[in-house]
Amino acid sequence: MENEPVPLIAVLISGRGSNLRALVEAKLPARIAIVVSNRAGAAGLEIARDAGIETRVIPHGAFASREDFERALVEALREKGVTLVCLAGFMRRLSPVFCDAFPRAILNIHPSLLPAFPGLHAQQQAIDYGVRISGVTVHLGTPELDAGPIVLQAAVPVAPDDTAETLGARILIEEHRLFPEAVRRILAGGWRVEGRRIVWLGGSR
Ligand code: GRF
Image (tube, rainbow, N blue to C red; front, side, top):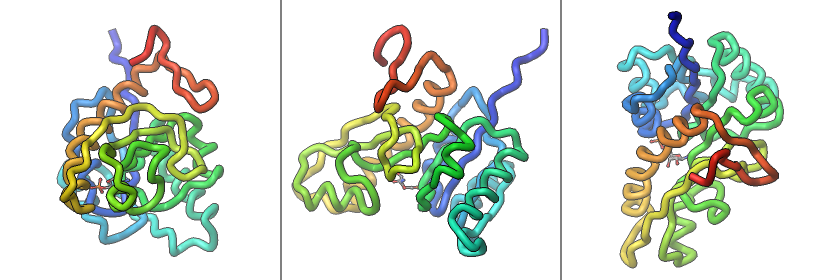
């Protein structure tokens, strides 16, 4: 019997790449076919190379417009036959040009319990607001910032003496657990999107 082809994933990064590392080290029923960074100096590129994964740098500044940049991204991913895109600290907003090319096939990770604290510096936002619980969200990527249907969330308590760094470090531990888990669940299928919600067929998960 022939083996089923494994799904091919792209991971988009801009920096450190610790979530990329978590995805590389997870036993996913998929293969990371390409890692793309919009920044040449992203440390995550080294993680990918060490793991023998093809890397591409596509610098957003080299393009006349956001749309042109995204068309280049789409082309690079299509060349590899990618069917799922993981945004792992990718610091560019994505327009419909990119999102429509991978409908319901983009996952983003964000270090707060969305819809609280979207955008930059989510950990500092949580501390400044005085919440007692923050956390992490994996959601479907859409053109709206940090607002796509939620796949998984995990809570992380905020300590009175937390700084953005100490809270961020504890959130990151949960990120590294949750992102691979979300990828597994999305790849396993058995879900659909109804309005804002992801409905898991066969019961809530
Ligand atoms: C993570 O906190 C992620 O939630 C956010 O950007 C950060 C990326 O970190 N979107 P890393 O590059 O994966 O280490």
